[in-house]
Image (cartoon, rainbow, N blue to C red; front, side, top):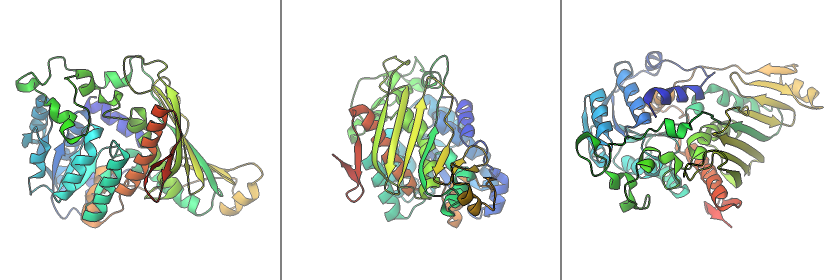
Length: 422
């Protein structure tokens, strides 16, 4: 994915939310300490983050000291953007004691290992979504945050949208009665699947090449650490990893993670909640190009807090289900500025909780973007948009949905043992 197209995609997630600019946010937060970053993973997403960190450096008092990627061409590009040292091995970045925080934008199967090792090395962590590739990795990252007390932000941008946070307050105030379910979707459609066009293959690159074309394939796979199976060089897997189970969960982890995390803020609070049981269905109905992942994916999740979620992601039609919360007394639409309206025979109850009105809109406040929030959490202890608790809770539900689809059965979560049970 090109940096520009990826940034456009990210910005779409936060549409309708009021965000502070980097400069005004730096002034509001009081950027009193320069923070030094290492960026690990410099593909489309990582390069977008790297460019943003360099641009906001002076006003937000940050600098990039080191970059890393296993593909030499990407590494060279990252070094030119940052003007810093670069490595093919991420451990060289973690060895730099002058680095305060790392930004991780590698393929999913590396998120957990690098996050944990970075915190063990004394670094704060900004890790792109999904938080990890497996449930076990998510819990390990969460537990490392608890133990080390380092700041870890997961990157689903929609959690920066104030509408979800204000909706949480409205639900706590009883403004739509008892909430029983919610819905959302993240759908796409293109003449050629965006999972292909946004991850273009460089036919000249590979592990047997030299110079700018060199890729450290063994390191990328991570088979020595049990992160993925060892296979021969496969350009399709490297450049389009989101299509294959060993490295990714497809539309569930790439797209629906963006939806579930903010909806859990609304329904359960900043730390989210773990599901009781999860089901998923769908299939490859159009995109039959040898991929593992479905092009149509639907999931439901039930929670102990007595609500259920229905989420959809397709690559075959981009008509969306609106983000919507259903309560006994009213319905809340979360698109743009959240709006509330009475439901059924519950007009009287709704009016009592909403100033005598049949309809109401919530008032939004300005919130910093994801990186700005991360900086303020490090410096001033600000509440993170997506902390490790929410990141892990979201990951468990999403991963259980992936496994439900793959194994064609209901996945049940044991909250006390924190594991899947039959």
